[in-house]
Image 1 (cartoon, helix red, strand yellow):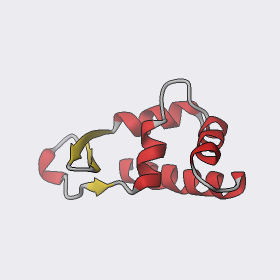
Image 2 (cartoon, rainbow, N blue to C red):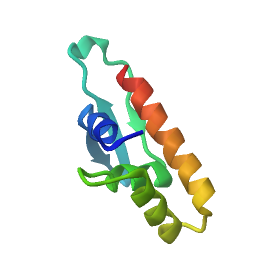
Image 3 (cartoon, rainbow, N blue to C red):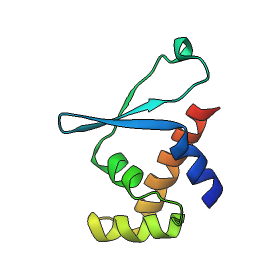
Length: 91
């Protein structure tokens, strides 16, 4: 997944904090087609909040390894899975 894809994914959603949770609302051309909201767990929120215009997968892996007690392999697997899920919701 490249930088352009990361930016596209993030631009396809708006976020709202509801209590202590971060909720993602997918943007669609027709609001009546919107049938899902997504609540982020701690890992998902961390990934989401660390995606910006200069972010790479490698940057996210490094940040996740520093923030959580995980190996680079597990961090990359979690990040890739998260981004693939977000990407599939944009299709």
